[in-house]
Length: 475
Image 1 (cartoon, rainbow, N blue to C red):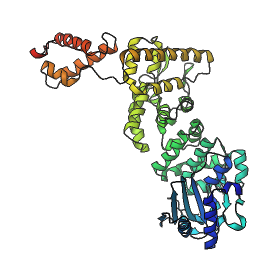
Image 2: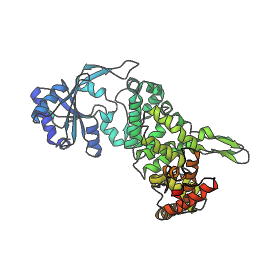
Image 3: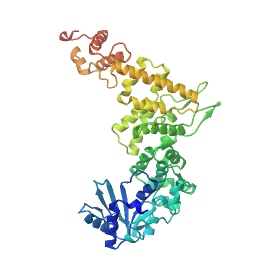
Image 4: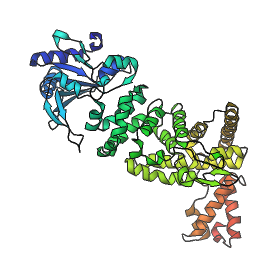
């Protein structure tokens, strides 16, 4: 493993440790990712059997007086090497014990073995020595290398204790399984299920940080399904849990909308790295449980589930402490419009329907089409092919009307202020009615998106409402 420590920073770390007479190790994620040959890790965790802060100060001196950020309360220190794009985190080896109502440990100085025991998973307990006498030696007391080779997530100690001590580790287990496409052992899964109530002592910010990483992974469904099956999801996203299950009446059933949603999120992830589009996929059907009805002779219906779902998004974003500005509005809009391209396809993609869709979606139309196409999860290849052909017709029609009508960044040719001036009106419902009439005329293809045509239409519409322009505005 000496080759893994080729970077000159590791020699500097080792020389500083030998000078102070302390054992020092690189441990955790850096070692794991190095062995997995993932992209070059940027965060390096260094453990000293002694003072991590003193080691950091000695290293900084050898690097020409770099700045050391010291966090005395935690006994840790940090050096940022911006030119090398590296971040060094220093801590003294320690052992930890926990109280039932907190994930903050009681910390005592400990040995290297104690420090490896406190790690969350065997694959994160791997250590590489930095001291001259055994430089590059791999220390793997819990079989982490074998678990890496076999793609397994396992705790170094009893998982019931590991997850009870720090319940965030349950989320981390599922996040690693999702990111690395690893399997969590049955013993660990059972322990997570047994301890899922303990998640309630974790802050929402920490939970959502792990959820974000699951949603950003190549195949988010793996993490989402594990969160559901272990009971963790219920604690922060009950609306998504409510999608699960199939009900049958009079021989008619509906699909399991939870597993359908998980596939939709994967389909979106395969085509877009936009995390908020992935969240829109996760929430696109949350309005179905509250709108579900069985209609005799028709079967199961979910009328207006997109509208209801989009209204639910704000409450979820508030609970998860997600940003309530543009990201939330984007997700709301995507959920609200999630079935619109399908409706346009069923209308044989008329100019009018395509115009209205383009007007409502604006700059987000391409991502809306990705969401809608990703929502197609049928295993019937013939049906799938037929629908994809219809969506292609919609795409073609959207391009056609966009080129002709310039609707993607639609601005009304006549605004409300101008309408008030032309007809000498005070603010009131007439202004909105006239603006809407002009907009609808353009979207329905009665007139083109052109100022002259819009003004002519406006004057005619106003007269039909008994309004006359001021003399200096006669058209």
